[in-house]
Length: 130
Image (cartoon, rainbow, N blue to C red; front, side, top):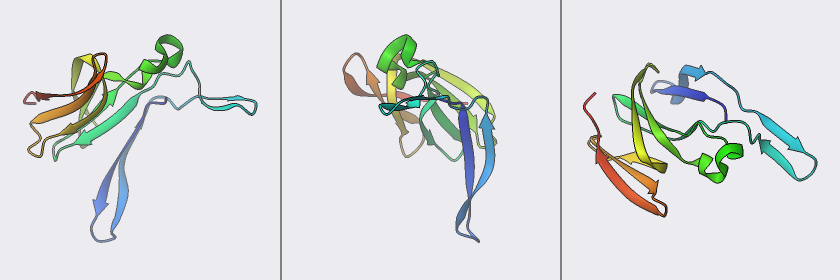
């Protein structure tokens, strides 16, 4: 919930990570209901669920769904946004299955995902050349 992404870079001289770019279009909405619940509003869409990267690109798994509309499947996404390290969107990949996690092969050419079809399974696909 909340469309927030920050890109950091490592400063070898200081040994610290420093913000390079902060991107946001919406902030999370929280709901308080007495002593029983404090958390994200059911009307607030889930945004970025997982991320991985190469030296050239950042891959963000995106949901865009609300728990009010689709229940717990809001925690899964089927859109993968591809950004360069300047934070510019260079591509969007769509998957037929709902995904919960993603990672890349060491050469950055194959993406591995945990897909729900309807049971969880590990799948992979070759990434397009961008």
